[in-house]
Length: 446
Image (tube, rainbow, N blue to C red; front, side, top):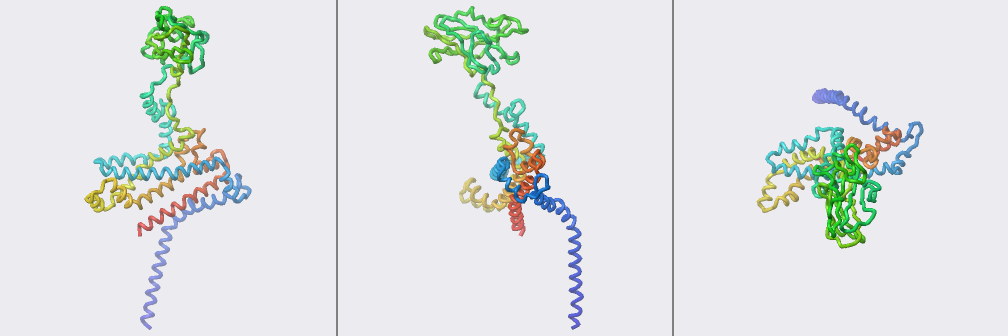
């Protein structure tokens, strides 16, 4: 009996101690719970309630806003783009991170290489968006990507020499802007022509252009047609239109053709003084033509921010920012792989490709899954890059759920009921991935 009486005070003391610990724990956890409630729980509940009302928030509409989501073409396009992001971006990032993590193990300066790839993570999405908006500019003089593309293109395909040139009206040539231009009347071998053009700025003239030759003084011969192609404009506006004046220059590099019965009989290229000679012609009537290739507009590169490429272009910017993150996480998992398994496979004669496919990737599967799911959660919420990089005219083509939600609510739509419904849809799409990730972390911790 005495033992029982003495045991009760000890048990009561333990219970009191446990209660004190719980109260102390609550005291420490309470600020975090209050913040969580104020910043997460309350906004979620408020958004859900707001999604059940109309744009003004005065009339209860039930699930009408959710029904409007599947009926709005712009919203459906945003859902389609979000699906593209979820499939493409995490897959590419996980694959790139895996390849780079494996390759950096073979590099002497692996730490410096990882640091360089991880540096974009220090750049905000706002700054990254501005950087890539400039990089994707259509004008090659401003957009670095198109400057490179145009440089490569022009290295294989010469640009037209005179994209702005046009024939002097009423002086022998017919044709519209951009060519081709042809003589209004036919010419027989032994004849000469003066073909005047305007619209070429002085700074656009080739450096090797010389004073235009006198077509009347040329002697092309009985089997050839000769002449000159020149800039029919003298400095200061002097001179006579349609005639070669002393201060006027020839247009070198022009392609000139002699055409008979719809077929090209001879071709020539103008010299530095603009002169040309179409030789080897049989007797007959010919039309002299300057093909449109002489006047084609210069190649301006790829329309990165056009409707067709704007989403892939923005995903490219996202890859630049997040590749380092994927590489570092996968690299940490790679460092934990037992080296004994790799060495045993090499001793058994396995190639590096077989080791990668059959040992490295399976052992890294848990890490790759965590990285992939984390990136899925992240791309579902992407907003900054899409909003900053996509120009106004193609904004709708690039929209994802997050940008659509903002535009509907605050960017001119002023329909916070529909915007709240979109936010709830986005939350429902993100939560399963978050739960999956949390469970994986708990299992790995256990």
